[in-house]
Amino acid sequence: MIRVQNLVKSFGDFTAVKGITFEVAQGEIFAFLGPNGAGKTTTIKMLTTLLQPTSGTIELNGLNPLTHAQQARQHFGIVFQDPSLDSEQTAYENMDLHGVLYHVPRKLRAERIERLLKLFELWDRKDNYVKTFSGGMKRRLEIARGFLHTPSILFLDEPTLGLDPQSRNQLWTHVKHLNETEKTTVFLTTHYMDEADRVAHRIAIMDHGTIVAQGTSAELKQQTGSDSLEAAFLSFTGSSLRDEGADAKAQLRQTARMWRR
Image 1 (cartoon, one colour):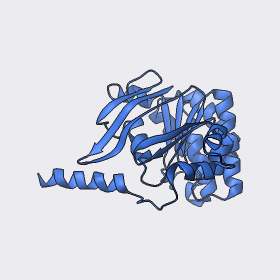
Image 2 (image 1 turned 180 degrees about the vertical axis):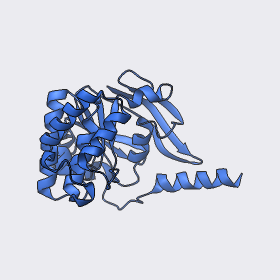
Image 3 (image 1 turned 180 degrees about the horizontal axis):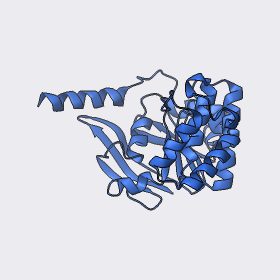
Image 4 (image 1 turned 90 degrees about the vertical axis):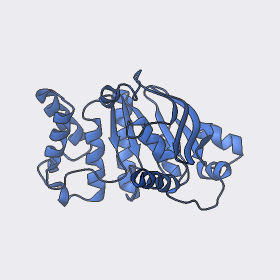
């Protein structure tokens, strides 16, 4: 479903992603972990057509997003780390607009909206403005919206950041259900190791722009002689604090140089 070969992204003299290779199978929940500044966000931006790679190849559901960007976008959904809902619209209106933008037929759109809002326990609030929702409700709505156009792949970038344990558990119960029933491939990033341990079929750990380990949670623990995924993660990446925005700063520096020209 996702094939990445020797993917590189450089910003001037800084290389954020250094020739990574990995595959994600259809229907798999794949966790992409790494410290701040490891290159995860840059990788996701390339996978979702927001950044052009410096070199290497990407394939999403058989499509090259570099040459068929619009077609590739029809095959995936994205839930960004930052909120993207229209708070001045109702839950139903947010869902309906998304369906219109993705050309989901009206009848099917209405059926999917009802099913997803019921699944994510938001149907009774469908006519309420999003600005009245709690953080957990907004996150559930964003993920429900991401499933609306039946994407082959759903990218989740820190989807449960800031949520309480009950909301996190509830959200993943719903995502796992749709993963199992609709065979949607889920590509997620998270800093919650227990989350990745519990929901991911396989895990890749990225550090300093390279993938330093791949495998199931059990395999990563076995490789490091660890009794938890967090301990295995620290064994692969070390325990020192990282610069949160090394690649972002490099992008800004490159943009500034372009403007000076």
